Image (cartoon, rainbow, N blue to C red; front, side, top):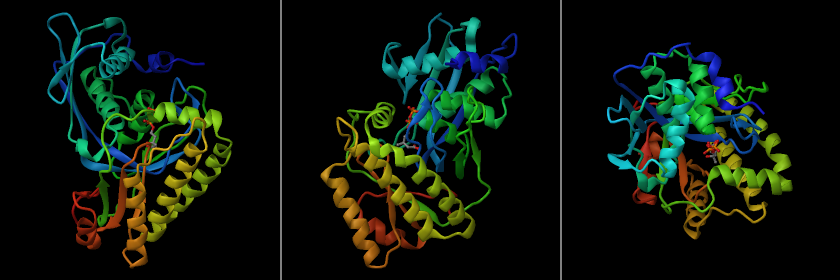
Length: 332
Ligand code: DP6
């Protein structure tokens, strides 16, 4: 197995020249075709390609400055964390891949503006923002595909948060994973809206990383997942090119439910849904029967993300009180 450091090393200059200050933003993203299952756990290489839409202004902003007191400092949303907290350890391990022998202590300050109530994962935008900030701080001048491949090593879904709009993470087949990176799709969809439905917040018992591993190892149903994902990816490309909202929404919803089916078929079973999640799904289906084109997707948690277009925003905001609406391509 190749290590992260072995993959990154050839892309770093012989001598690093740290800057004075770097700051970068990366958006959060919602997958319409999910990444679920790895062929390489060290490098986060996926078993299937995935496709997402980035959440515009919602995401993470990371600032890097030199620490003058000889020790690393990790801050999250304005609060300094202890260096042995799980967040700090992940951040420092990632930074170590780049600063190498220089071992210069740093202040790494991250702010997430993702509404915590929406229960959205912040590891995707967090590692993407950290990667962009490191690139700036050390003047690495990495290409977008390289930034994406390296962000992937922090968290798979971070590979997609390097880009805005519709993004495809190509699975690649190289052992070092350098062809497993995201690319931005040229299409835009100004009327597209994503609604964040809060069902529950708080730490999940089984995170995505452990959940996908358990699914791959114990669910026979998982064998059908790569086939489903490949077919959905093609349908999503068609939907985007044809601007066919029903096809986009229906494909994303079926893809999410298929992923959840593999989770439920794991042992011990993984059911991320709460009774309120199921109630919200039934409400989406009822609204569709009434002629409102709305679909949902869900990640490894109880919250729903609704897909709809701008003209139906008021109906959906009334149906789902507290709905947080995002325009991924900006307001038309
Ligand atoms: C269900 O990217 O969090 O949200 O690579 O282990 O860090 P690691 O996993 P992560 O998994 C995200 C899984 C998902 C689907 C998706 O975003 O594609």
